[in-house]
Image 1 (tube, rainbow, N blue to C red):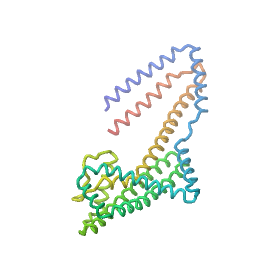
Image 2 (cartoon, rainbow, N blue to C red):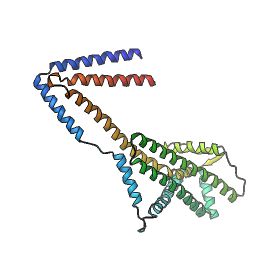
Image 3 (cartoon, rainbow, N blue to C red):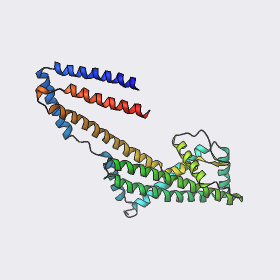
Image 4 (tube, helix red, strand yellow):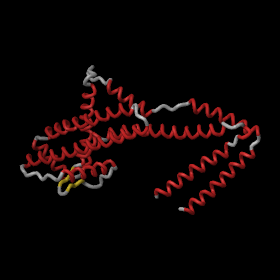
Length: 309
């Protein structure tokens, strides 16, 4: 580590020496031209502002939800929209899960037996009702957080986004657990056999791993909890409460990071321009200060990288 830093310091000193040499070689007319161009650039950057798009998007979504009308009803517009979207997502999740599970012979046999028993409509209706309740809860929480995020500063914005993701994932796991236990109970009555209920902690940990695997598109193996097989349909079904939230949060965080990069880069450039132009033209040394700022930044980053290794 010491050798690497020593070599880096030597290189940075050489770069700074070259910057000083460039400044000393500049003629007065060159300095004047660069000096006034820096002043113009400072004025341009200081006057040009990039809006906080992450806050504006959160506010726009919040207002759109509040003004949402279904069948000329604004009072229940949000609820009706959430339930309708939930039903659509449930159907899509079932289709995706069915296609993933169709290669598994056990799933095909179980599905056929449910069709033959005439209970498929009951299963599907219960699935839609369960999902509607949890999707509505997830969307309501996200709506509340979006309203807070539209007026939050940088740190609070990140905290709210993380809390929303954690809650959405928790709701998804709770839904998956309920679906799992309810299906075991319903199957035990349908087949007239005793249900074998695994411990809730084991089920939760398993479901968390299965969600992560599916989000990573790791579908090479069938999910098993002990001797109990878990179809992909269950997992895709529960993810309807999480995937829309994570997509929205990723978009907001992307806009947030864009603003953060803008603030840091703009602030650094404005600071550099201000420091270089606060002296008279005769003392104007832009390259010397540039070399010093870059060297300090690189050295601090190098020390930090070596420290965290």
